[in-house]
Length: 113
Length: 111
Image (cartoon, rainbow over all chains, first blue to last red; front, side):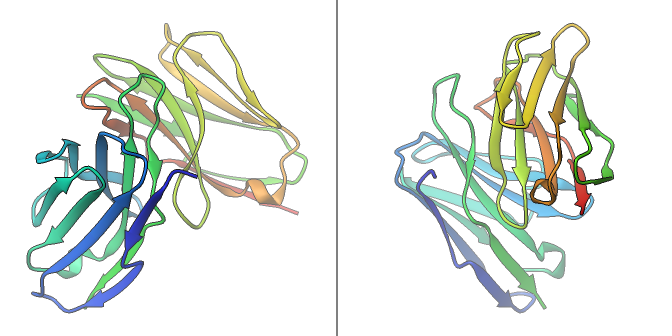
Protein backbone atom coordinates (compact mmCIF):
# COMPACT_ATOMS: atom_id res chain seq x y z
CA UNK A 1 0.00 0.00 0.00
CA UNK A 2 1.07 3.56 -0.71
CA UNK A 3 2.33 5.39 2.36
CA UNK A 4 -0.51 7.75 3.13
CA UNK A 5 -1.86 8.54 6.55
CA UNK A 6 -4.62 10.85 7.65
CA UNK A 7 -5.22 12.38 11.05
CA UNK A 8 -7.42 12.41 12.91
CA UNK A 9 -9.35 9.36 11.75
CA UNK A 10 -12.50 10.47 13.53
CA UNK A 11 -13.56 13.85 14.81
CA UNK A 12 -16.69 15.34 16.31
CA UNK A 13 -16.86 19.09 16.52
CA UNK A 14 -19.35 21.88 16.94
CA UNK A 15 -20.69 24.32 14.39
CA UNK A 16 -18.51 27.39 14.04
CA UNK A 17 -15.25 25.86 15.21
CA UNK A 18 -12.21 25.62 12.93
CA UNK A 19 -11.01 22.14 12.04
CA UNK A 20 -7.77 21.01 10.41
CA UNK A 21 -7.28 17.62 8.81
CA UNK A 22 -3.81 16.38 7.97
CA UNK A 23 -2.63 14.17 5.13
CA UNK A 24 0.90 12.81 5.25
CA UNK A 25 2.67 10.82 2.52
CA UNK A 26 5.98 9.04 2.38
CA UNK A 27 5.98 8.45 -1.40
CA UNK A 28 7.40 11.83 -2.45
CA UNK A 29 4.55 12.20 -4.93
CA UNK A 30 3.95 15.55 -6.54
CA UNK A 31 0.15 15.60 -6.55
CA UNK A 32 -2.12 15.55 -3.51
CA UNK A 33 -5.90 15.82 -3.36
CA UNK A 34 -8.65 16.29 -0.81
CA UNK A 35 -12.05 14.74 -1.49
CA UNK A 36 -15.27 14.46 0.41
CA UNK A 37 -17.61 11.54 -0.05
CA UNK A 38 -21.32 11.74 0.67
CA UNK A 39 -24.16 9.36 -0.21
CA UNK A 40 -25.62 10.18 -3.60
CA UNK A 41 -22.77 12.49 -4.52
CA UNK A 42 -19.82 10.18 -4.90
CA UNK A 43 -16.31 11.55 -4.56
CA UNK A 44 -16.06 15.31 -4.91
CA UNK A 45 -12.78 17.18 -5.18
CA UNK A 46 -12.32 19.97 -2.63
CA UNK A 47 -8.79 21.20 -3.35
CA UNK A 48 -5.66 19.78 -4.84
CA UNK A 49 -1.95 20.50 -4.92
CA UNK A 50 0.48 20.13 -7.79
CA UNK A 51 3.59 21.01 -5.81
CA UNK A 52 4.81 22.68 -2.65
CA UNK A 53 2.86 25.90 -2.16
CA UNK A 54 0.95 25.22 -5.42
CA UNK A 55 -2.73 24.57 -4.82
CA UNK A 56 -5.99 25.06 -6.65
CA UNK A 57 -9.71 24.73 -6.04
CA UNK A 58 -11.83 21.75 -6.86
CA UNK A 59 -15.56 21.60 -7.42
CA UNK A 60 -16.65 22.06 -3.78
CA UNK A 61 -14.05 24.40 -2.30
CA UNK A 62 -16.31 26.92 -0.52
CA UNK A 63 -15.68 26.91 3.23
CA UNK A 64 -12.38 25.06 2.90
CA UNK A 65 -8.76 26.13 2.61
CA UNK A 66 -5.56 24.14 2.15
CA UNK A 67 -1.85 24.50 2.62
CA UNK A 68 1.17 22.55 1.47
CA UNK A 69 4.41 23.81 2.95
CA UNK A 70 6.35 20.61 2.26
CA UNK A 71 6.01 17.72 -0.15
CA UNK A 72 4.78 15.21 2.40
CA UNK A 73 2.02 17.20 4.11
CA UNK A 74 -1.26 18.57 2.79
CA UNK A 75 -3.57 20.25 5.30
CA UNK A 76 -7.28 20.85 4.87
CA UNK A 77 -8.89 23.50 7.07
CA UNK A 78 -12.57 24.07 7.62
CA UNK A 79 -12.52 27.70 8.62
CA UNK A 80 -15.84 27.61 10.48
CA UNK A 81 -17.37 24.16 10.42
CA UNK A 82 -21.03 23.75 9.45
CA UNK A 83 -23.31 20.72 9.65
CA UNK A 84 -23.21 20.46 5.84
CA UNK A 85 -19.51 19.63 6.14
CA UNK A 86 -20.27 16.43 8.00
CA UNK A 87 -18.73 13.88 5.70
CA UNK A 88 -15.96 11.38 5.11
CA UNK A 89 -12.81 13.09 3.87
CA UNK A 90 -10.23 11.27 1.79
CA UNK A 91 -6.76 12.37 0.85
CA UNK A 92 -5.20 10.95 -2.32
CA UNK A 93 -1.76 11.16 -3.90
CA UNK A 94 -0.44 10.66 -7.39
CA UNK A 95 2.90 10.70 -9.12
CA UNK A 96 3.69 12.51 -12.35
CA UNK A 97 4.15 9.58 -14.74
CA UNK A 98 1.27 8.74 -17.11
CA UNK A 99 1.00 5.30 -15.52
CA UNK A 100 0.68 6.70 -12.00
CA UNK A 101 -2.73 6.39 -10.40
CA UNK A 102 -4.32 8.02 -7.40
CA UNK A 103 -3.92 6.19 -4.11
CA UNK A 104 -6.12 6.99 -1.17
CA UNK A 105 -5.55 7.49 2.50
CA UNK A 106 -7.78 5.69 5.04
CA UNK A 107 -10.18 8.61 5.41
CA UNK A 108 -11.38 10.88 8.21
CA UNK A 109 -14.95 10.75 9.42
CA UNK A 110 -15.96 14.26 10.50
CA UNK A 111 -19.19 15.03 12.32
CA UNK A 112 -20.23 18.64 12.85
CA UNK A 113 -22.94 19.03 15.48
CA UNK B 1 -18.56 19.74 -19.43
CA UNK B 2 -16.58 16.58 -18.78
CA UNK B 3 -18.59 13.78 -17.22
CA UNK B 4 -18.52 10.11 -16.31
CA UNK B 5 -21.72 8.07 -15.98
CA UNK B 6 -21.91 4.63 -14.43
CA UNK B 7 -24.71 2.12 -14.72
CA UNK B 8 -26.46 0.53 -13.06
CA UNK B 9 -26.29 2.53 -9.83
CA UNK B 10 -26.98 -0.59 -7.83
CA UNK B 11 -27.14 -4.30 -8.45
CA UNK B 12 -28.03 -7.36 -6.39
CA UNK B 13 -26.89 -10.80 -7.55
CA UNK B 14 -26.39 -14.29 -6.15
CA UNK B 15 -23.05 -15.92 -5.60
CA UNK B 16 -21.75 -17.49 -8.78
CA UNK B 17 -23.45 -15.00 -11.09
CA UNK B 18 -21.50 -12.98 -13.65
CA UNK B 19 -21.95 -9.22 -13.60
CA UNK B 20 -21.10 -6.44 -16.03
CA UNK B 21 -20.70 -2.88 -14.85
CA UNK B 22 -20.73 -0.01 -17.29
CA UNK B 23 -18.91 3.30 -17.45
CA UNK B 24 -19.43 5.87 -20.20
CA UNK B 25 -17.59 9.15 -20.47
CA UNK B 26 -17.47 12.45 -22.28
CA UNK B 27 -14.21 14.32 -21.86
CA UNK B 28 -12.29 16.71 -24.06
CA UNK B 29 -8.81 15.31 -23.42
CA UNK B 30 -8.86 11.61 -22.55
CA UNK B 31 -5.72 10.09 -21.06
CA UNK B 32 -6.90 7.01 -19.20
CA UNK B 33 -9.85 5.36 -17.48
CA UNK B 34 -9.54 3.82 -14.06
CA UNK B 35 -11.59 1.39 -12.00
CA UNK B 36 -11.56 1.32 -8.22
CA UNK B 37 -13.24 -0.91 -5.64
CA UNK B 38 -14.54 0.58 -2.41
CA UNK B 39 -15.59 -1.57 0.49
CA UNK B 40 -16.32 0.09 3.83
CA UNK B 41 -13.12 2.09 3.62
CA UNK B 42 -10.99 3.93 1.06
CA UNK B 43 -11.15 3.16 -2.68
CA UNK B 44 -8.52 0.74 -3.90
CA UNK B 45 -7.18 0.70 -7.44
CA UNK B 46 -8.18 -2.11 -9.80
CA UNK B 47 -7.31 -1.25 -13.40
CA UNK B 48 -6.03 1.51 -15.63
CA UNK B 49 -7.07 1.42 -19.29
CA UNK B 50 -5.56 3.58 -21.99
CA UNK B 51 -6.01 1.65 -25.26
CA UNK B 52 -9.11 0.29 -26.91
CA UNK B 53 -9.68 -3.42 -27.12
CA UNK B 54 -6.96 -4.55 -24.74
CA UNK B 55 -8.42 -6.50 -21.84
CA UNK B 56 -6.98 -6.06 -18.40
CA UNK B 57 -7.50 -9.07 -16.15
CA UNK B 58 -6.98 -9.86 -12.50
CA UNK B 59 -8.40 -13.13 -11.29
CA UNK B 60 -12.16 -13.09 -11.82
CA UNK B 61 -12.19 -9.40 -12.72
CA UNK B 62 -11.58 -8.07 -16.21
CA UNK B 63 -12.07 -4.77 -17.95
CA UNK B 64 -11.95 -3.38 -21.45
CA UNK B 65 -12.11 0.06 -23.01
CA UNK B 66 -13.80 1.25 -26.22
CA UNK B 67 -12.44 4.70 -27.11
CA UNK B 68 -14.61 4.97 -30.20
CA UNK B 69 -17.88 4.47 -28.33
CA UNK B 70 -16.49 6.12 -25.16
CA UNK B 71 -17.18 3.45 -22.60
CA UNK B 72 -15.63 0.75 -20.49
CA UNK B 73 -17.00 -2.37 -18.86
CA UNK B 74 -15.90 -4.20 -15.74
CA UNK B 75 -16.77 -7.89 -15.64
CA UNK B 76 -16.79 -10.04 -12.55
CA UNK B 77 -17.27 -13.76 -13.08
CA UNK B 78 -18.30 -16.34 -10.47
CA UNK B 79 -19.12 -13.60 -7.98
CA UNK B 80 -18.45 -14.10 -4.27
CA UNK B 81 -19.83 -12.27 -1.24
CA UNK B 82 -16.43 -10.58 -0.93
CA UNK B 83 -17.09 -8.83 -4.21
CA UNK B 84 -19.80 -6.78 -2.52
CA UNK B 85 -18.61 -3.19 -2.78
CA UNK B 86 -19.01 0.06 -4.63
CA UNK B 87 -17.17 0.04 -7.95
CA UNK B 88 -15.99 3.45 -9.05
CA UNK B 89 -14.99 4.55 -12.53
CA UNK B 90 -12.87 7.64 -13.15
CA UNK B 91 -11.28 9.34 -16.14
CA UNK B 92 -7.98 11.19 -16.23
CA UNK B 93 -8.59 14.14 -18.53
CA UNK B 94 -5.04 15.38 -18.28
CA UNK B 95 -5.50 18.39 -16.00
CA UNK B 96 -3.00 18.10 -13.15
CA UNK B 97 -3.84 14.40 -12.90
CA UNK B 98 -7.32 15.30 -11.60
CA UNK B 99 -9.85 12.53 -12.05
CA UNK B 100 -13.46 12.90 -13.11
CA UNK B 101 -15.48 10.42 -11.08
CA UNK B 102 -18.68 8.56 -11.72
CA UNK B 103 -21.13 8.02 -8.88
CA UNK B 104 -20.29 4.35 -8.65
CA UNK B 105 -22.18 1.07 -8.88
CA UNK B 106 -23.14 -0.54 -5.59
CA UNK B 107 -22.89 -4.31 -5.96
CA UNK B 108 -24.37 -6.69 -3.39
CA UNK B 109 -23.62 -10.40 -3.76
CA UNK B 110 -25.95 -12.58 -1.74
CA UNK B 111 -25.00 -16.10 -0.66
